[in-house]
Length: 346
Image 1: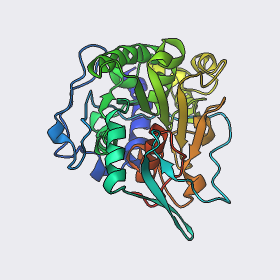
Image 2 (image 1 turned 45 degrees about the vertical axis):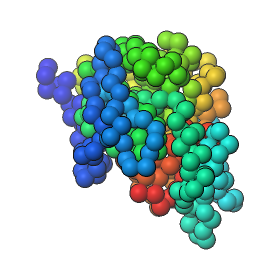
Image 3 (image 1 turned 180 degrees about the vertical axis):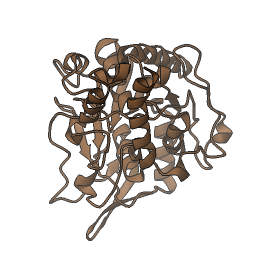
């Protein structure tokens, strides 16, 4: 029985670990201290000394998150158009110039750091930005999401990381209930501000369930998913088959199979209820989300395929958390800017 239960977890974990660059998994030595997120307890504010030099926004931390081995399936609306036009400029939502896209021949535009008055305006805008909660996924380790959190802190955001209870192996609805409590704690620490969610893999389903069914629409302003199995994944179906139809007892695996009762209910009605702003990001090389278009949402979401602008960019499932090009999309989505991936970003 223990062997049967271990099969899906090991399969998903090994696949994602092989895709992850080992050198970037460890958090930076100067990163703000973190506390492990649970459904109880108060998210800890980070020591400002842990923020990168030149960044005036305070950073916050919560728990470190886990890596998700979930995948996706099911078609949805069209991607952000990428051919036949120059990429639009990335402009902060307050109207101040955040980053300028520099046109280049035969290459995607590059982000240029603002200087002088533009930089000052950018930092002032981010000082009032929503707190960002990075929502982790299935069967991973806490340090996996720290590089993403560090990028956000370097851009001036206050950041917390939510680790799924029981490594995300249990009922997704229970994980969503835990997220509801955690969001409440973050909002209390941030003086009642709404939050933005950046969710990886299963974490995107947890976040959607919270928004659609547990009142999260009143607390969340932006939702960004990275490789989330919005409509299920064949990988979970295969694991279910190997587990003799039950995913060896792993409830989250059962719920992420294509056509599961959980996904049928979650995807009933509007995929993207207002007033939340919805963005999904996916990659052709996602080894756990199959078919990759099942990571899309309908009903007005902004769906971004990394390779639609950057056909030579190779990004795996876990790579969505670590990849520089993907991060430029996350940053633009959080600023309500036009989506223009930087194909050369590190």
